[in-house]
Length: 194
Image 1 (cartoon, rainbow, N blue to C red):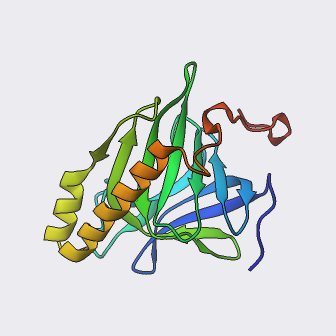
Image 2 (image 1 turned 60 degrees about the vertical axis):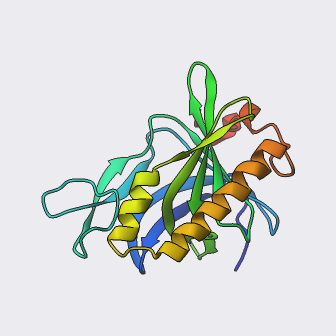
């Protein structure tokens, strides 16, 4: 499949066992065999999983969910993914101070589709301070719950933690592509988003 061009709008689709769990658009910053960088502007239209009562689901605790239209984050989001890894580095833009803490999303490797990319969320995440000196786990309780529910095995949970350790250490070491100044990145004016 083809690589997408900078400035092209593509579809990001989070899937769970083949079903769409969440879907949103993103703008391609960079797309190569070595690096995929995507920008999601603030308040981007999205579809999210809800239960029969209309409550947004954090995990697929029911086989019967539907999708509801909403908007994404009030902040912009830059996602950096190295093909072949099972995580993405997310930088969340928080005006007026700029980008806030880094966020490492543990997920399957991005799979290229005709419309964009799809992936499976692995529940466990990492928060990294702006100074890139420390990191901490986020959502450990949700991963534990996902294992108890049979959504993931204990072995998969251990693999996610190992990937998180590698990802956190990689970012803190500032090895490529994390040596680039992602905190200074802004969308080009011609994209019409800020």
